[in-house]
Image (tube, rainbow, N blue to C red; front, side, top):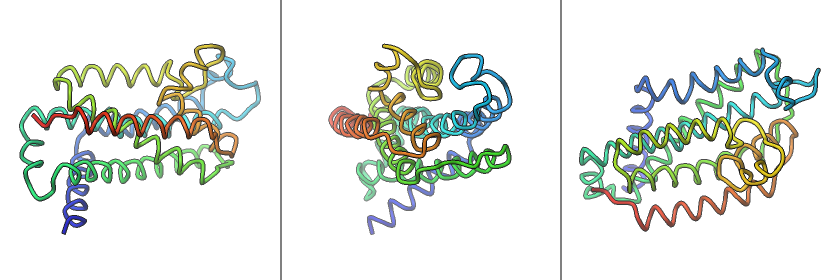
Length: 243
């Protein structure tokens, strides 16, 4: 059955990620390291992101979650898919009963499983560091689902239209930019903050900070992620090439 094939493909994709040391470094080690670093150093206070005496975990936790999601849904999947395409794996899978849609759904399922593992590790580490909330569950779920959809679709679009080596370089660079100046980890003031708020990275960061730090749902950020998810999905379906 189609559902069984999708589940099987999702399981295969998940195990491939968990067995890949480089992807684990990007998806797990870096976000957890960022969480501990921001929580235990005065960096956020020094940058003026939070006031002296405020809890740095209100920024560190959503930042680590956003970075985790971007690592798995965008960078990791884009690189893996690009090299699968280069070596002809995608072309062979597309001709099997799994089909194109089954392949994409399998990758989506794998990303969701990996993200859940990442979230469990981040929240467990945050709890050890003293994090007690607040957490808006609905806001967190919406940010996660729509953030995954938007970043995964854009990652697959790049993987299906650009050479594998270029995808490797570009996605790693974009990952660094999203984390540093793209609003993924911290909010940016002024006009630049307004601009990045309409980008997937900035919208994801805003939605996470609202759900974790403020205990609410950022409707504007959710709408931005929804639009990017629709645009990315339509573009990927239109221009993605399996060869």
